[in-house]
Length: 256
Length: 324
Ligand SMILES: Cc1cc2nc3c(=O)[nH]c(=O)nc-3n(C[C@H](O)[C@H](O)[C@H](O)COP(=O)(O)OP(=O)(O)OC[C@H]3O[C@@H](n4cnc5c(N)ncnc54)[C@H](O)[C@@H]3O)c2cc1C
Image 1 (cartoon, rainbow over the protein chains, first blue to last red):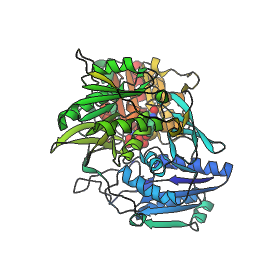
Image 2: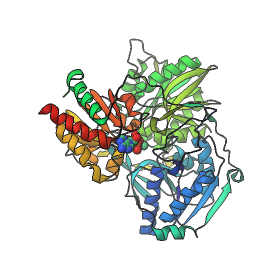
Image 3: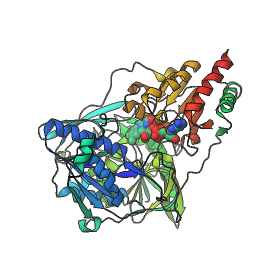
Image 4: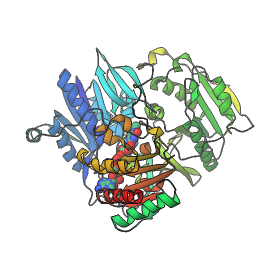
């Protein structure tokens, strides 16, 4: 089975986020980056499917030059090779533009399965996988918790709202967007990190792909959300705030 | 005609977010001018359509087809594509449900248009609507606009007050979509629930909920002590359950339990929307987080900005003292 996993590099989770001077994107100067967490779960699922069924796992990543670090990480965890669609630094593309690039890059590989995380932790559009499926004419399922390949099809367990689930059977080729927690994540081993250095990474400039990668959803302004609720922030050392809180819960909220 | 809102039902029951999307559609129509129409898909939806017609809409388009009895992305996309091509809305509005996440990007791609997902409010700029959405799970906001029509937007839960039915009713019109069984490649089975949960968080008076701020499983006793001192149930955000540190049945949020205790302690939880929808009905919310700009502080009544590993033990001491 040939599996493509599409991964994104995003600012590390606990980053302090600052808006840049033109107010349209982040100041990226002192950010550190990591693999988007839901994509890490998609990669894990792909690796386990390959271990069970054989085949190949190819990582596709659209991102600026710095994304090579995330690509290396995916290779170190066990992906066979990678395609890096290189895009310029700066404001992020909308999901449609990104998906057009990814779809072009994936198309020439003729995969059976494309896996990706259900959303990115930065922009959070939650659309890229679905759009890639539509552009390639593949079927798709989102928020996937289990993947069971069968003969020419795949049966997946989807998460619905309020504790409901549903199985869906889909013909291959298919795009699945993977929910966090689907399997336990592995760490890269030292051996894996060493091997990753020899694995193939094909870099393609976005412009070479002849995809329309202009964003038509533009961010005019990025800012800290306005606070509307009057939250009482308690101040002091730990002992003081703890004391204040107990008083408030007892006498103001009357809940203790 | 300007704004078309897509309502959602399953087996004849509303998804309540439909009415929040309706309210958003009205706000958008005020911004761009024009009226609001609605669309409802399914196998048999007449009575729901009549209800929706009372919610300040001009018209409800009903698309009934046996092929729409069970949701599939192919069926919904094909039907709505035909409706949109027939009525030319300027803006198409969806509630941001899991189902919408599944088909709306496919539909908007058919029109070569981006979907502006997870919108929390609407502004106007030069006669066009400008949409506010959250980035980084609520840590930043962005004003987004898209050029060209139609615009596709989905509305985040809890951000618009649901439209209530009134006395005046708009019209209900059948829209005959041409669907073909061969277009529908995904074969859905019946939705189901997992076996009965053994932990019922909804009955708890006090809940201590722990998030990724706890760092490691071995640190859990820190919050367990707090739960014990308060006589509270222990709950968690999703990543804690994903990691297997606490069982799934203790998860609060859109894919976990929805709780409304007298007091909810959010400890080391950032306040992503999928968590908030499960606990924002709590009577009193206390947030303990080291990041003063964490979105949880927007929902909390009392906030402590600090390291949970210092604050929580101090709190346990104080509670014990006050009970002694
Ligand atoms: C379809 C879907 C369904 C989902 N369903 C759910 C759901 O049901 N429930 C749910 O919870 N999530 C759900 N999520 C995930 C959700 O989007 C968030 O990723 C998740 O809630 C984040 O959990 P968290 O707040 O614990 O972690 P994080 O967002 O990583 O936040 C950790 C917080 O801890 C703080 N912190 C770190 N160290 C300390 C310290 N020493 N002291 C104090 N504070 C500290 C940090 O400042 C940060 O704010 C869902 C997501 C999707 C896409």
